[in-house]
Image (cartoon, rainbow, N blue to C red; front, top):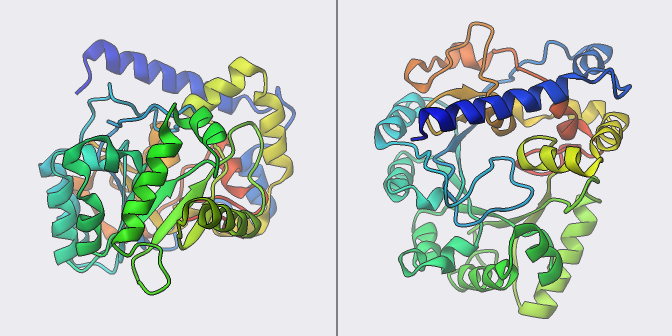
Length: 347
């Protein structure tokens, strides 16, 4: 848990970011709400929860420049087993079919494996957002590929590029080499291979203030380069636009790129992508059990609202299935171009 002074500092930082995002008129762009009204999609509402995304803690073995969670080794926020138990009870007798575990490095939560085992016994499809380097960071994590295989966990891992220079620039010195080693370990137990149903998907997000290229084109290029250079195979590549929040928003402001980037996102607004935003079929649970429409809203402290329960202990599927989604200007990141979600492009 954070100290009181630490909590106050973080709340102040989040409020500062919300103030920056809310000042859209000074940039000369429309509000996201107006954009939705123009396509008769406001208020934006849930279409029913299919994916239950759980942030089990902000502790991570990396400190990536683009991280919207602001995760790192110094973060102490960790979901307790009691809160995990509340999550299990909330979805036990529901049609929610997928649980998406994220962090930080979710594997660093001391109850991570217990949680996966309980979800697996429940018959839920489990996705883990693994940063890859955690697998080789410490001997106690070396058996993660086998643990994932045993429970048929879908592994989703960020890899900024297929070269060391660009990957390490975003994620830290030596990350590319460790990521390649981890990918080979996953391939060895059957992940991402043609004759296996064990899913290994990679995530690409740009290293600067621009939107990702074609998901299909990048996937072909990544597959070719990783196969030729390292004999690594994987299933799918997901492209995710860097949303203007947390460390990336700070970078945009300090570098003087904020106005131009927001204009770029707003100009690329795609009504089709807006229809498929992930907040419509996903519910995000914070490490402390509070509920959010998406992982990005979670990092801005924008809890579900409009009469819906705001904590997992008060979970009400009927109310949450039809809730109105909380929006702000950062949402332009999910509706620009081909769209962006935790599952890649949406249009």
